[in-house]
Length: 115
Length: 112
Image 1 (cartoon, rainbow over the protein chains, first blue to last red):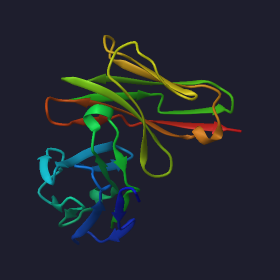
Image 2: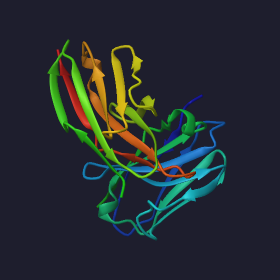
Image 3: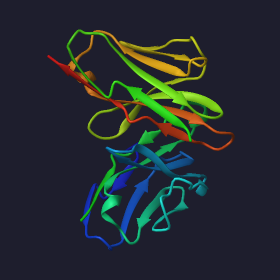
């Protein structure tokens, strides 16, 4: 398997623009997580899905952020409008047995810079 | 609010040294504690611990959990330059819903 695939790897945009980050989880994994990583706050869970259904979105910072999972092999995280404080690395991770093993498989991240 | 605190924030050692990384936590409904290694990009899983006093071991890495004192340590013996990375501690808490809280990590640099 190719692992968790994220795109784009890097995005530079201007304040106010819409940003869409994409994720393809590992086939067969029924949990999908979106994390954000910054130097100040470390890794923060934004939202997670189980079987394509959002379970906990309490980490989504505000209404400018939204996430969807239309099918088992694709998820998006959208920021509209973007702000400079959204600059971070956004990770997608998937798992099929995290309750038993704690193992999440992370993608390589999307580095977002908002000017 | 759940808290995971790692120390030290950074550490520089020479190859062959032994290091101990610390993780303390305050969470409700503790389920498990996890260690991840983050090199340049994505974190990769090392260990999950659920019971106090039982050491998990993988090669030169080992970890143990103390649920009474609410901390865990990660030991790396005979360090190598390839061990240079950020080591992340995370605690899984909550009821039926997943809630994984990460510490900010310890940056380990192993010099030749």
